[in-house]
Length: 92
Length: 156
Image 1: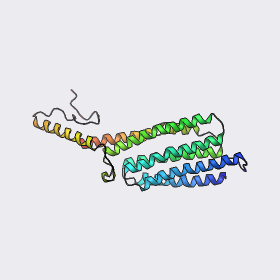
Image 2: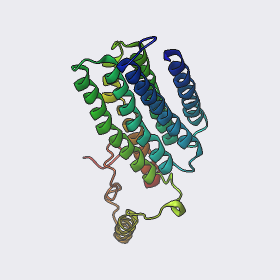
Image 3: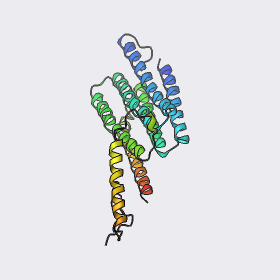
Image 4: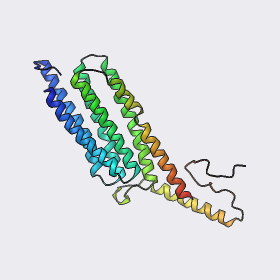
């Protein structure tokens, strides 16, 4: 049971991560890439949590809380700078 | 998970397995949405919503497996912070996407900002016309709403 759950979850999460990485690679704009990297971070958090649940330990719990706390800073920063740069381009 | 579980343990393990697989499928759904949706706004919709439910399912699985009461508040804190921060990043990305025209206007059912944008554009055009009418061009960055600093304004 444990092995089956681990293998199925690993396959699903690998497919999801491959999709997110593909979107990071080809994403037509910077914002698409930021969004895809956010999804990749969420997939990483899901993998950490599944490892904790299946193996019954809490070693990654602090990392998980920190991820949910500050994981959004990167995309907010990039979105802010994208808006600023385009605004100046349109202005001049 | 316990090997060769019986009774209550087997039930809890089965529920945990279902929760874990469902949570992983939420991540897969987000990735499929990222790949298949046509523009930034719909991709943002697919990328931000399944994360929250997926994280909730997986955290519930952790709580079921650990079976200690003090774990639940920490898991609740993790989930609540995810619930608070995901809309912030989605809002900022959507705002930047709207401003940089990363959207297909024909796919929107309503554009609630359109009237505001049109009015602001009209005000800016009127300002420009007024500046062109006067002889001395006194200020270049008067009508910019982004609040950018340091682009060579007349500071002294």
